[in-house]
Length: 397
Image (tube, rainbow, N blue to C red; front, side, top):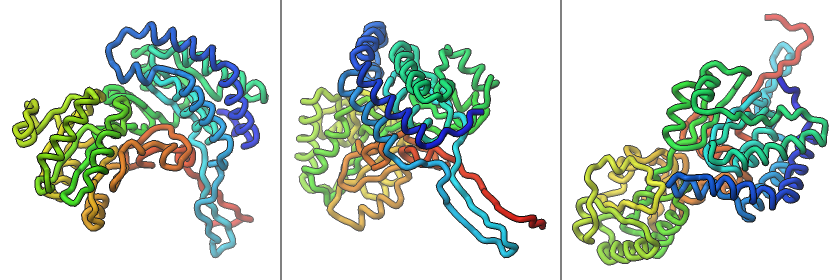
């Protein structure tokens, strides 16, 4: 077990990491180009996540610097109590210990997620996808350089070069203690980890996010929110489903204009029975498509009778990630936001904001669709557990 490093040392390592990322910028981009050229798959969203350009390196540097500037999440007092027998009782945040992060194709996770885990006093085991291996190994090499600079053990950040079978074996019988696993990826990866893990798992779930255009919607806002929701198809906060209130004034005109805009952006538009008939769209073959997360240039539009029906529909089909209501009616917005069972609920704003950086956390380890122990973006202050500190002078019960 690694002994907790002082906050000064943790911050110094993070700032050194930011420096090294700047120094090695060209080298990281060149190595990543090799990974991109070697990728033979046809998953456009994976290719998008795999790519590292100057902008991505800037984001990595910003993440490392921002983490160094944040308060220490370890040892924060959450509760205190003076027992009648004189004992002083505290409850304080504590590191998990060792966190395993399993992720696909995103070399920036090797900086951001590892940085969050490290800053919160955890040892990190990184298991990246084979498609980003060389990019990841280069970044881990920089982590080791930064750790050595301050006399810290390089095993604070460890890369697991495992294939699927080796990963399964490690999950079922870890060769070292693992306290928490965070799988970041598609549903297959999450199901695989849940099936084989022997310790707690934070589920970074699927998107399949909904926008509801209520009858009192501002239609410009509705259009902007929907278009923005499809601006990055590889993101888990993208919009896949749009529900239109059947009582929306000028409904047909609005839907028609929206479809034209989506098609201009090369987005395939599907419709339920009503919308497809009214707008000459391909109708959906079965209701099961409402469960699907597209991760593609594709959107499904349906008609809905009421806010209550919308809430029921989202709670049945969505991935529990994000949903948005577009309305000028505060009461309807409140009803929607209180009753829709997603990690983030929006009123007149884009689901694309479900992101640790955008919601004030500085960065994120993952976006959890679980309800324990943290929901939505998991930031630095959430990657801790807690511990009771009890000070006495001989009290017995």
